[in-house]
Each structure stands twice: as structure tokens, then as C-alpha cells.
Image (cartoon, rainbow, N blue to C red; front, side):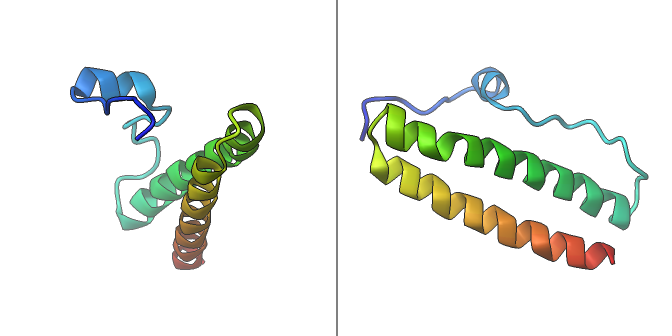
Length: 86
């Protein structure tokens, strides 16, 4: 809707992401949950940093609201992942 095209190749996706596939924690279910939690927290920080950018710099309140909703979804999932690690 904003005049941009979605990336269509793995190379383009990899250039856009800040997440990695490196497993640095023990290779078991608890380790995978920890890795997933780390990724969710990284996404939350990235989204939180950009909410006001879209609203204030780009005057795009729709995208800012959309990002706020995404952030809330990731925060809920992170909370659930943390509860599994207790």
C-alpha cells in the first residue's frame, strides 16, 4: 500500500534481519526456549525503538499503531516463554 515491494529472495531477507540462527545455548528444549526468548526480546526492542519513528518522523500513525500491536504480541509471547523457564 505504501509503494514498496516485499523482499522475495533469501538473500534479501537476510539483509533485512537482525536475528541470527546461531545456537549458543544447550541443545535441548529449555535451551531452544531460551534462544527463542532472546530473539523475542530483540524483536521487542527493535519494534519499541521504531514506534515513534513512524509516528513522528514519517507521520505514519497507521504503521506506528500496527507496530505497537506487534510489540504487544511479542511481549505476551516473551512472558509465556519466561514462564516456561521458571
